Length: 193
Ligand SMILES: [Zn+2]
Image (cartoon, rainbow, N blue to C red; front, side):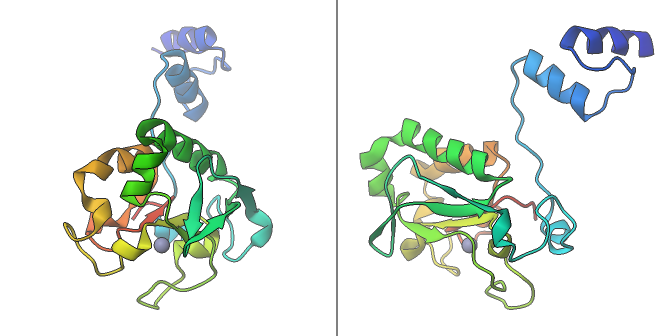
């Protein structure tokens, strides 16, 4: 078995140590042209401050992204959005995929251009612990029609025409509180529940 693994490792260009670790898995998936959603840390792990996202409130860990389609914050155009550098390529790619899938007119009709913010050093709405926004790993969209306590089907982001929106984010490992818990439909985060 170990010999077989070493042969496979040699074939996909990783060190042939006979152990199937994360590098071998990544190389195999790439060779097979398979994409799997990244596994982000859990919320609890993020709150320890010891995850890949580090401590909350670290503005030096944030980078600015220029969105591929126009976003509006409270009706005003948004030049760039600030998120944690570890998720930035995923946010950039997901927004591009949203544009490719829906086009600008449909994006506007669904409110996917209504941005509700990302980085914000604050507790959760229940007040107990820090929000994932405090690490810059959560984003809000279409807040006017997807308030904290608005449930499906009143929450517009719960409608079937937004399924692709969520599939795109989920393929990048992001989690929707709406899809998982039926509240705060505006919110998506790069941390598991
Ligand atoms: Zn949020």
